[in-house]
Length: 291
Ligand code: FVH
Image: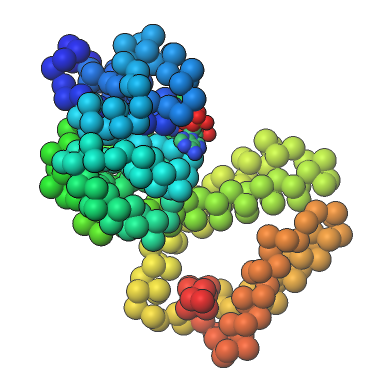
């Protein structure tokens, strides 16, 4: 860490689990840190580490250099921006609250009305990872402001700029988390299934982890099929998958576990076959996912 005062000041607004980790990482990197939280008592541990509490959100945004916001929802962020009054003109706000691309674009437009330079972000880490080697944050929006503050933001982890459109960080964030949730649901369903016969999830994970890893290594080939719109396969056709998936549903019912995560897989396979894609591989399903 650098000596306090040698790094640019940062304000952190929102001291939940994530915001507290962000503020602690800025402090550890030697930045003077101002903190604000709706429930003021949560500033205590950070003040004990050297942060300065702001009297209001407006004071935090105007007084502490770069302002990093991490609240529960973007509705909360909108309320916060609307509460700032005239004071924030010329400040830069980095919003790391989880949200949608449309919300990020609306917040960017509102920030511009207020004279604020707006950067949206998506945190690819849990609080315990912030500032560590595996954490990174996706950013989009005002590129000039991002480049100015990039060295400061590096205290949190890697800095990946996804484009000047403020919605792009959120789009990438949600897409990455979509892949994660799909994997988590499959893994948990597998554990639920083996446990119906008294097999421990821990033992089964020794088989599951290399299997899922080997399957995931095919993702670049699926991507090439999606991008080229060439889905014919000599690996595993949709017809083969359509025939197999009812076995999963039947086994889940027989073993007394839920079918609710896999019913939609059967439905989309049935639709793909009805629409004439029996010989294509699973990559074809991307077409059918468009609303
Ligand atoms: N925790 C995680 O692992 C994930 C990792 C990826 C990014 N997410 C997103 O980060 C946002 C904050 O999540 P969090 O884990 O810090 O959440 P909490 O610990 O519950 O803290 C919530 C903070 O939001 C403040 N807040 C809530 N409502 C309002 C409001 N109306 N006005 C102002 N602030 C509000 C809350 O304040 P308080 O309840 O202490 O007064 C906390 O500071 C979130 O988008 C995740 O999806 C985290």
